Every structure is written in structure tokens, then in C-alpha cells.
Image 1 (tube, rainbow, N blue to C red):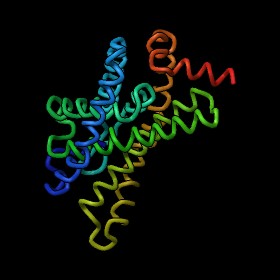
Image 2 (cartoon, rainbow, N blue to C red):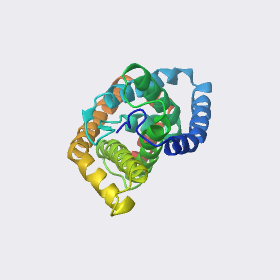
Image 3 (cartoon, helix red, strand yellow):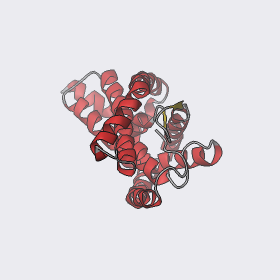
Image 4 (cartoon, rainbow, N blue to C red):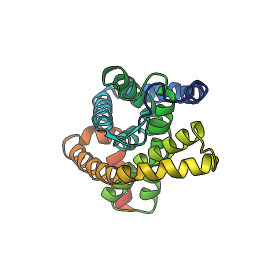
Length: 227
């Protein structure tokens, strides 16, 4: 749901950038703390960034001024938490804007907020709720990735509705219009992303169990099984 370059009014673009900036700073501190004593986690950070970059670059035409695509933020949220995904996703969005003309510099703040702030924070909530009620691990990972994607699409619809309210129905009518049009492509994409994230997470368990142990994920799961 990248909003393209120059599409948002300048006051909206600046406002979203100001809102996103503190999260980027906090996210950098979160990453620094996690890798300071565990440098082996840098490889997993790279995997999270690559997964987000590849999936979010697979765009389909959608609402005017934007597009539909997976986000790839659910995996990194599970591994490192929602704050860490903010600078990771910011780098991804910046590279896509500069190298792929996907998104833009003026709309970077809005895209950061929808894809790597709102999406990961809701995803983290879903992940912890799933563990709390002891859902199967695969289903929890699926829901985490699914809602990271869906939340991004809802927030992007909100951003566009705020910038371009309907002449008659205002924000509400505009939001319904944008959200409905997005849903045609976004819901199937969110389902596909959920399944893909489960597959990648299972591969990490198989081949990168020491790193997952360092993150506390495998240890936590074993403790939950023994309770």
C-alpha cells in the first residue's frame, strides 16, 4: 500500500513524517540493545529486512496513487518486536523509493507509519494474544502476518481518506471507498502472506534454532509446553 511520490498534500506528508520520526529513533535503540551482546542476531536482522523488501516489492495496481502488496513485517515482528521493525522497514521503504520508484520520499513518513509502525504493533498484539491463549504456533504466526498486512491496508485507507475526503460524505465515505477498493486485492494477498510467513518461520526453526534460542523464542515455546 505504498502511497506514491507527491500524492499527499504537503501538510499531510510532513505530519506523518513527524509522527514516524520518534518511532525510528526508538527502533534503532531497540535493535542496538538486542544485538549488542548477541552479534549473531545480525544475520536474522538481515533475513527480516530481506523478507520485508522482497514481499513489499511485489506490488499490484490498486487505488489511484497507491498499490496493493504484501508487507513482510510479521516475521521481523515475531523475531525482534515491533519497534525493531521500524528502522528495518524504513530502510526498505527508502531503498524502494530510490531504486524502484515504489512509494516516494515525500510520502515516506506516511508509508512508514502504515507499514512498519501500525502493522507491526498490531501484529505484536496478535502474536502475544495467540501465545496467551495457546493457539497452535503455525496458526499464531499466520494471524500475525495476516493482521500486519490488513492493518497496513486499513491505515493507508485512513491516510488517503484524511487527505482526500469525499465532497458529500467526508472522511467516512472516503474511507469506505478506499478500503473497499483495496480489499479486492489486499485480502487475498494477506492470506498468501500469512502462509508464506509460516513456511519461512518453520525453515528458521529447522536451520536457525540457535539464533531463535538467543532471541528466546524456542526457549519460551518449550517452557509453555512443559507447563
